[in-house]
Image (tube, rainbow over all chains, first blue to last red; front, side):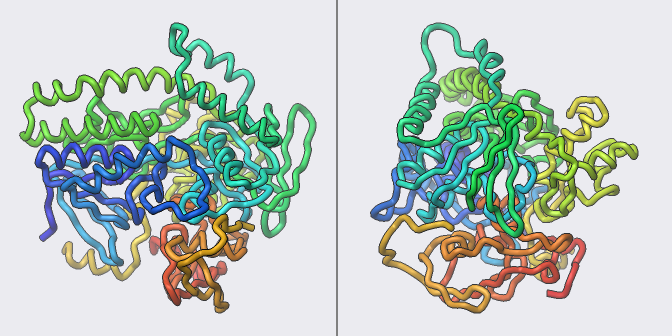
Length: 462
Length: 107
Ligand code: FES
């Protein structure tokens, strides 16, 4: 018989931890499954470890996660690190792998707090060893104090600038920052600046950070319109275009970034309804103010449902826990509402300032739909943009049908690196919206399960 | 090449990478360990034999797959190094689909 609990939380980042603290505090039996070895999600990754002497300064936003981590550790929630969830059913059965064995858990309510991933950046040469995401550079810095000298950082968005700042703090010379934010985005974003004279603090912080970097002598090239990674067996140089002019920088490391997008593989495989969000250019799971999805007893909190940042994720985690407690009869609706009022108010305010960032850092079209036919879009199966367009010309209507034409989306990453690009290319080819084209349907197992473990589990399920 | 920003590591482990012994920082991921000793190519793709290395470092891209203690297709960025661990980079032929869908090759 499978183990049971009242509330299962998938993910131990800000949203999952906040949900666990709240729910355990209300007396619910809570199990938290997370694939990392320590809590914190990507944003507070490795924060618990005593910083080794000499570790570079990672900034105050990182250190701010400490109280949340402590409260999570002190809570009565049953935390299971290194647990990879590979299937969740609508009956709220969770199948996961931990300690090399397949395990099962049945929950009365599930909060999915799986977080975000970086948006794929399909440019020519992005599969070469040496090309990584800016987030990957940050993870190496946070978890292993590893850094690369004379790297090129390219793209747009707050995380990119933060990682460059962290590199500079660490004393690592940076070859160049190739900024791709379209100038027109500034004009488009300006009207969504929150009203009045108060400039939001995150904006001031961001501007100060960029000024710091320029003052530190980082070669900062704005208005970059196109990028290419050059090399034979590994990255040797980065080429970029401004206007009609191409230039080249020799380097062994390129860190790309075009913002973050929700990881929707789990909610898609479950059958939750999703809608296309044109401003963030990604899929959002449909959810109410409590995080409730189209499926009974399944909620989503944090960036996994739409990018809002760490603060919003914590508030959403708490609200989802309060609502789960109400649904499970532990809390009256009035009590839930009373305890939620303040969080809901702050969340509305956060949402307003978010809009400005979404418009400002909306990626250029060419980084979402590579115009060059040779560019690989599906890294796993090595399918190019040209092959996707050729399939469209033959009548392929959507990403799921595309599997019959190419193998795009069928490799081990399950479309995490090509799903958005494929839907966008097909929409463009058919002259229609991405919402009409639809998203790739993902199927379990969502994470690799060893064949032996899977066979043993099939047997036990009968 | 990635460099370690901390000069004297107190805790290290010895691992084998493609048969050669290397001393690396304890507690880091296999992907970080390989990068720290200068390995860039972790595998070759089954389809086009193109070289690949870690891209995302957070478990989403599956480009860091290698053979860890005899098990193929392990995500190097999601596995912590242990003393005496044997890691082999994967060539196209050894590249079994980690989901067991297609089962190419004969690892
Ligand atoms: S580097 Fe992307 S999954 Fe390991």
